[in-house]
Image (cartoon, rainbow, N blue to C red; front, side, top):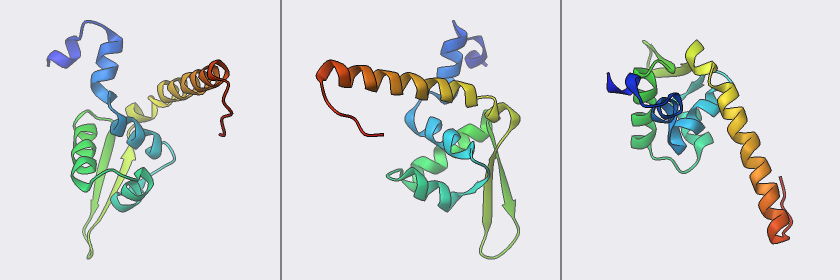
Length: 115
């Protein structure tokens, strides 16, 4: 319950999605529903254990839902909830800031950047 009584709203946001993998998972799921294997492949060097752990945490926080299909082989889909989709402007803002930062640093260091 203490996470809902954070000192600031920014702190609460960071506690909800405040690491690399959670942000990348959410960003990936903004494109639509994905299966575990798709997420793992698209996220690159994430381990199965770390992906599973982060998906469970995001599910507990109400950011995504996990749907298990009763079939063989098992199929599990992950989809953002409305709350998860509401993080899109936050992630877009972070991306915009990073693009500006990268451009400013490239100018400062006089290097060429490729998008």
